[in-house]
Amino acid sequence: MIKLTVIIPTLNEESNIQRALDSVFFADEIIVIDSYSTDGTVKILKNNNVTLLQRKFDDFSSQKNYAIKQASNDWVLMIDADEEVTIELGKEIKNILSKELSAVGFYIKRNNFVENKRLNYGGYSSKIVRLFNKNHCFYKGIVHETILTTGKLENLVGRINHYTYKDYNQFKKKMNYYAILRAQELFLKGNRVTFFHLYIKPFVRFLIHYVIKLGFLDGKKGIVFSYLMAYGVSKRYKELIILLNNK
Image 1 (cartoon, rainbow, N blue to C red):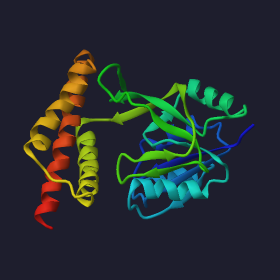
Image 2: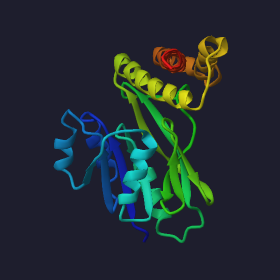
Image 3: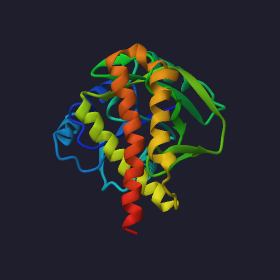
């Protein structure tokens, strides 16, 4: 049986972290990489059987890559504090790790929840590499970081539950935070801002979630989610304009 390390990055996640920890009870090791939380997150962690690392946050890839280097096992499952591994996925992971593997990583899809109710249509549908061999994979990117790998990737059937936000203000605050980080990344790449970025691209993002992905079938939550996704794109380029003007 291949041993597994679960890694969970945190920053002020007292309302979510216990759920995430409970969902990965099957792990051989749990590492939490905390960016010096100021709420009750650390207190909760100290009441659980986890390895707590604290590191000043610089970007998502650096934070995760640092934690990966501390893992005792080659195989790592990376989840966010606002996520939980479903029972079905947990069983599938254990079954996968009981065999000889040809793949170095596995894609996992997510179920998205808004105010504890699942979005059936308009949420994120992309698959992300979450289970991987640390000797063949590493993260790259300041925000919306991605796994780079030197080997074969396969898909898992089970999903992660993602509790996107508890209320409108919390999600908007999160979108503002990500927009600032993404703007910094674009600034470093030398990107510029056009009419397309400020107006067309946010509108297209709204259409993708609300129309193409049938978000309108999710009712009020579907339109709010779609709007906030579009807002995040618009905010990103407005922040980039500020950076460019201050250069």
